[in-house]
Amino acid sequence: MSALNIENLQNTFQNAVNLGGSPGAVSTSPTQSFMNTLPRRLSTSKQQKILKPFSTGDMKILLLENVNQTAIEIFNKQGYQVEFLKGSLPEEELIEKIKDVHAIGIRSKTKLTAKVLEHAKNLVCIGCFCIGTNQVDLNFAAKKGIAVFNSPFSNSRSVAELVIAEIISLARQLGDRSIELHTGTWNKVSNKCWEVRGKTLGIIGYGHIGSQLSVLAEAMGLHVIYYDVVTIMSLGTAKQVSTLDELLNNADFVSLHVPETPETKNLLSAPQFAAMKDGAYVINASRGTVVDIPSLIAAMKAKKLAGAAIDVYPAEPRKNGVGAFCDDLNKWTSDLISLPNLIMTPHIGGSTEEAQSAIGIEVSNSLSNYINEGNSVGSVNFPEVSLKALNYDQENTVRVLYIHQNIPGVLRTVNNILSNHNIDKQFSDSHGDIAYLMADISSVDQSDIKEIYEKLNQTDAKISIRLLY
Ligand SMILES: NC(=O)C1=CN([C@@H]2O[C@H](COP(=O)(O)OP(=O)(O)OC[C@H]3O[C@@H](n4cnc5c(N)ncnc54)[C@H](O)[C@@H]3O)[C@@H](O)[C@H]2O)C=CC1
Ligand SMILES: O=C(O)CCC(=O)C(=O)O
Image 1 (cartoon, protein in one colour):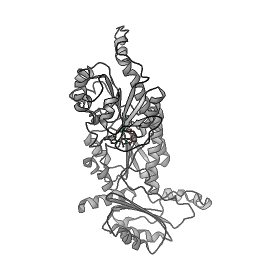
Image 2 (cartoon, rainbow, N blue to C red):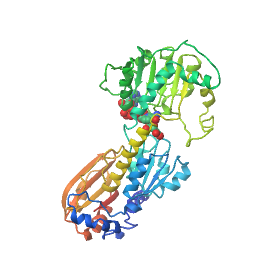
Image 3 (cartoon, helix red, strand yellow):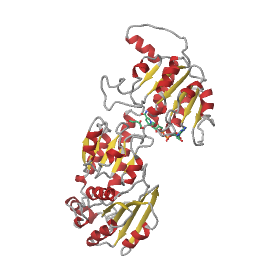
């Protein structure tokens, strides 16, 4: 990492906690909001202590993509400044906005690339208010000391229920019948319309969503087989198969529930469609890159496939609106929309009131815990470290949050710096190149804080530091 980058990283946290541009500006006197808590501090021992020195009113949170109201309420309660936008932002606007904020909340459309994050001088953490985190450069964020959080299963049920609806809709050609009748055409047919009872559902990716789908599908009389890169205990009477081809050869319905990774790119393409049963159906509510759409179009036109349901696309519009889904976005759009028995939805797998409300609560709490206490449990790119909240009895205790490069000798150096004080608790963990140390040190005078900060700041392995007290 270049000297310039290290300097930038340093600035990030200095700004985030109001430490100013130089360690000399460390505040050793309580802020006004800290003073406001004083009566409670004196009268209520064991109550969770609100840690400073940052003033919560200085924390700026940018929420994009119509993140749920529950999140706004939780951030408002914390006293943070919240800016809320319904859509995502084009790259240039995002770069401008991200320069200023301490936390950002996004869903699946906002791309937090290295180029964007390079400008995020004050950013402490990122909240993905969804399951997928492929839209964030997780390694780059970690190297900058930015923790990323998501909601790993709050919308799983919603996706599974949508897929169940699509299995029946495809088997009965409901989409086409509905479109016909909307335009006055009465077309009462049973040709190639099927019950789902007794058919085989092949699930690719048996994680939170895949396994939930498995249970619902069996309740409707489907046989379930699944393929996953890891061995996973089956639920009900579902059976894990050992190759993707085995699944494709035997399933009447194939549903994808894998993350976007280099390995899952075009997981279903021409050879995989060829391996499927004639008249099979494909459902993709995972990520747009997982299915090669031109090959899917070819398989549908050749009647190899009897239908498909697609919720996710390689490119998706930034905002809702008429004309947003067009050939300019994905060049095959016109071809795709002309296909019969094709259900298309605008990435709404996880879009239910229940899921969005739960996600809003979960992710905003994770971000608040990290900002206020340093707890990184649940982070997807960072060591997961947590210490119990400090209480008001712990008057002269300082919490040290030290994010550093994962190289030998760092803990010895840091503990030497802390050695004049009692280290009450310490928790350190690493994740790849990054390590994170939380330590509660007691018997610290306010006047020691500046010195501790300065010494930690001079350590070679430092990525960022916060001292909370
Ligand atoms: N359409 C929508 O609105 C939503 C889409 N999603 C997408 O669904 C994906 C899956 O979600 P979860 O089930 O919660 O994830 P998960 O992490 O619980 O499960 C994913 C499973 O896929 C398996 N897997 C990974 N690579 C594989 C490969 N190459 N071949 C076969 N299996 C592979 C993993 O071992 C794991 O068991 C998310 O990553 C997200 O992209 C999630 C929520 C909503
Ligand atoms: O609700 C969203 O915007 C994204 C849902 C999704 O794809 C996810 O949770 O990974």
